[in-house]
Length: 114
Length: 115
Image (cartoon, rainbow over all chains, first blue to last red; front, side):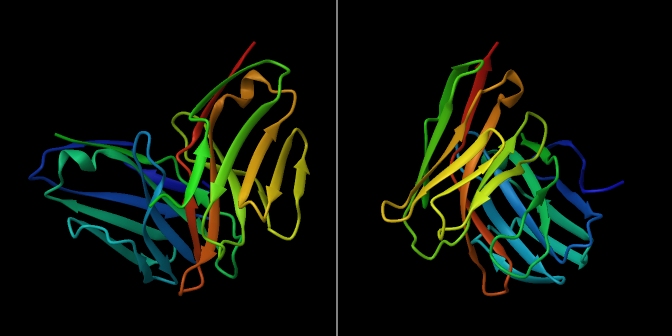
């Protein structure tokens, strides 16, 4: 399997639940990203990891907790979410080295918070 | 503050026509301007990109026009086909402190090409 794979594809959770989103990339990249895509809003960068180290946190609420155990895997742990957190969560990877690096996106996890 | 403004929000074009999507940016530190294409149920995929040292880049039926002084750039799709129906996002990029890509996206344009 190649590219960026995200699981699950769909997730429905209550506001008191704890769940995790998983992303795996098979491209040998060293940078991984979480983006949030909401209807009629721009894609919002949430977190960036370079060589497993978090290098960007775009003022994301603490109910979202990322984890990057190695350069191929990225998780987003979710707890006590709000209905407005319902969105498509996209993982991406790239090979850092300069502006203009191509981002490869997964197909996303469609999250619904009830 | 929206750093990249994209218009129109939606666009309907007849097969064979020209589709034009416009974007404007504010931050002069941006140095890379990609366009991403997203089909339903899929993540965005890079379509074409340009750097500010050139005014135009063409790849097949897709052309980016770039106006650095006006801080505007646009995507032109020539001979539009029904298979081009998708959502298109413009973006602008700068480097994070960590050296990785930091893309700022426009809100997207939903293109429908009628047969």
